[in-house]
Image (cartoon, rainbow, N blue to C red; front, top):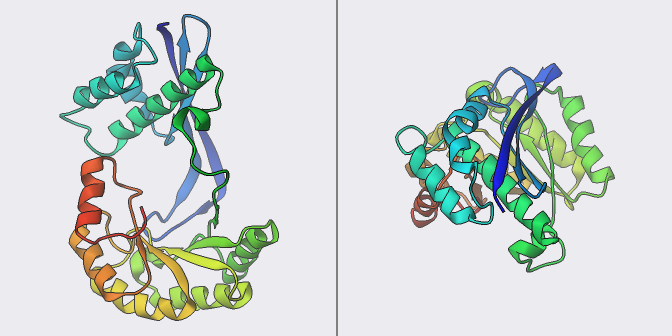
Amino acid sequence: MKIDRVRTTLLVVPRDPPISDATALQMTAGGYCFVQLRSDEGIEGLGMSAPSHGVRAVIEHDLKDILLGADPFDIEGLWQDMFWRVRGFGRKGLAFQAISAVDIALWDLKAKALGLPLYKLLGPCRDSTPIYGSGGWTSYTDSELITEQLSYVQRGMTRVKMKVGMNFGTQPEADLRRVAAVRRELGDDVELYIDANNGYTAKQAIGLGRRFEEYNIGWYEEPVLADDIDGLARIAAALTVPIATGEHEYTKYGFKDLLTRGAAAHG
C-alpha cells in the first residue's frame, strides 16, 4: 500500500461576534486545516490542525513529497522524516501543527485499512473518560458567561472551564468577580477550571491564585507565558490548586522539562 494523494483544505468560519481570551483580544474566525491522505487502494485518512495558511503551506511545500509513494503504515519512520525536514524552522509552532495533522491522518488511514476503530488500534485501557464544557470567553458579559457555563451542566457535564486574565491581566477584580459569580451559580458539586491563556505575570498569578483557591478551583491553566517554566514552577510551589499547561508545548523534551521542574500537574 502506498500514499498516492495528499490534499489540504483550509476551512475558516467567521465568528460574529468575535470572542476574546486574556491574550487574543479579537478572534474573528475559527476553523481547521484538514489534510486527506489517500492510498492506492482507495482508503483515505483524515487529519486536522489549526486554520492557518502557514500550516497548510508546510504540508503542501515541505511534507507532501515525503508522503507521496510512502507506505502509510510506516508512521514512525514518516514522523522522523517530517521532523528532520522541519528541523531548522519548525521545532515548535506551525510546523509541528502541520506534522500533527499528517500524523492524525496516517493513524486514521491505518485504522480504516485494518478495519478497526482507532481507539482499538491504539489500545484502550478504559471504557469512558470524563469531559468538560469549555468556553467562558472574556468577551462575554457576566450574564452570558453564567448562561453558557450553566448550559454545560444542563447537558450533563459535571466539569466546566472559563477564561480569566482579562485584557492581558489588567482587570483582576473583574476576573475575581466573574469566577465568584460562576461558582455561586454552579454550586459546589460542579468542578470549575480556569484558564488565563498566558495573561498574568508570575507574581500576579500567585496573588490572584490564592484568591481563586477560595472558589475551589479544579485547575489553574496557563497562568503565565507557556515558555516561562520557572514562573510556572514558582506558581505551582506557592499554591495548592493544580497548575495545568502544555497547550503550546510540542515535544517530549518540552513536557519533560515541565514535569521534572515541577511546573505542571496537568498537561
